[in-house]
Length: 211
Image 1 (cartoon, one colour):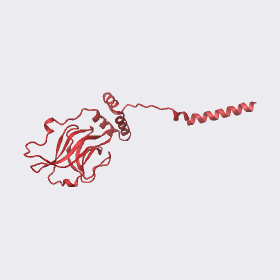
Image 2 (image 1 turned 90 degrees about the vertical axis):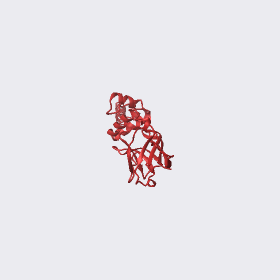
Image 3 (image 1 turned 135 degrees about the vertical axis):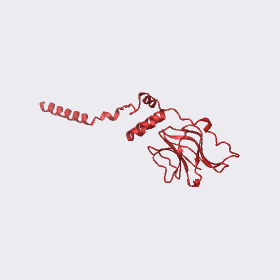
């Protein structure tokens, strides 16, 4: 009898030890985590917490890989829109005739926190100049955004600009129509897209591929 009791107790001890080590119940229990976003003020963390869930989760994922980029992107996105002044949204003034469109494309969303809407069109002006014009434009906000013409049509965040991209200037605002002069010597037939690009982190925010 004692042997049976001893054997039973030994079996229970072994099973208990195995359960303590493997903890199989964890496979059936949700472990909910709601971490505060690192590096932001209380007000900024509150604003991030009120963002759509997919955008918030994308920022948290980014923070695991590049904390500085995530913090700066979060600050930009919870900040106020940078609206282009109304007087700068019109076509260049004093044009004696209608400009002609040479190429045009629509901006795309790349992921929940990188994207834009609106059109990008290259116009030939009657005085011989050419401009890249954004219309009905709104971009996700981000740190230090700039405008390029690219020989590629990058459709992912870290795709890059490709070789010999043509720099047109800092993004004037993330909301509103805007114009960018194209150098006279540029062969625009060599460029496939307009790109909104974050310089410090080498990230593509959006692309409008010319059709």
